[in-house]
Image: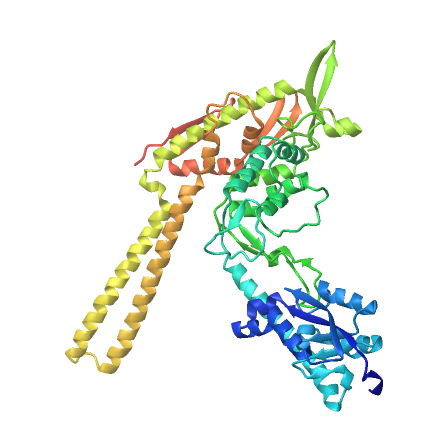
Length: 563
């Protein structure tokens, strides 16, 4: 103690305010903990301390006290190691840190070992004065309380965020490219017209057969800002570890992330990543079942149909040749009928003339399957003919459905529901009548007051149950009507191409699931919604329609006489 009388300490003022303090604390406490107020309190305390000279003010604004990986704190530690600072002054122990073990390590072990004086003003603690018996108990206890407080705040924040996610509120600081937060509610998403049109173009280019690389190159050629650069241009403080050049460009990875993100069909998926607790900051991906998915939460940029097709395309091996920007017309769709491997397009030159054909990729690589060789033009011509015929069959079905849709006996499910609804309505009327009659019987002395109360309650219960059943039936009827409206929307996907004269990549991926090649004269096509098509054909006889598919794949129908 005597040796330190004439010593001048070189102090670092340390102040901290966390995001949690701003989110959770009351306005009065937030004001008292503000950076400016902490500085003012400390400087006022030091103004008459002749043995302390302030050499630096270190500020961590927006950093949690649950760990000590804070930039200003680490800079202060570096000053201590270099001998620039030998005294640390804080407003109170909670501003220094809220982690019990590490706070104790610094205050009780590291600072004393380095000869650093530590002062916590509001806790009336100054390490120069030495520890008394009370300090031995109170200081660790206060650190423990601060640690518990930090844990409690973390739990509250996590719980609050979980509730917001389940309500469909966007709680991420940055939203997906193509959207922005609304001005009236920062938790709601709306389409960003500029970026949104780029997203729609990306999906359109993918459907047209362009690879992710080709799409990225095209966007860069057009000078369209990448998501990172677009956020920066709008004043966002967005940071990423993927930036490699002075200007972040579009890449195939960026394009694929957009193509795979279901936010563009209106689904909000949050809570994918978390940390073990408030002390461990390393994140990990949660099981998909634990993600919070709110479907149709906001306006979509892409239709469900286009999104589903794009996901299917992303799962295919559809690499482009070096001199092509788009995949070939039937890439990933045409497969070998024997081994299931994709058919590979190959070009041969004979007498200066080029011939393109498809052959089994297994045969090309290992010869373990026959070639199934078929000229490209023959395959595409056959596919076009079969597709046009299938579309004609679909048109025929649509006309049939439009005709028989007005026939009463087709509404079997609705008729059953209507009958149930009518019976329940009759039951409610009967319950009301019985209650009126019951009152008259009581007035005339036929029924005692005790029996009246008991029977009135019983009829009331029956009435409430019947009314509840009516609401449930009406809801089911609404659901059936909605289901009926949507049941055959797939027909329209084919109908819009009824005037098709040539194949395009978009048509192929929209309408065809797979083309199995047996040989140059035999192919088999599985059209999209084939299960719906077959189901509808099987249902037609019960609707009074007989169907036959002839040898040319034409749909022949005969409507039965309705009695």
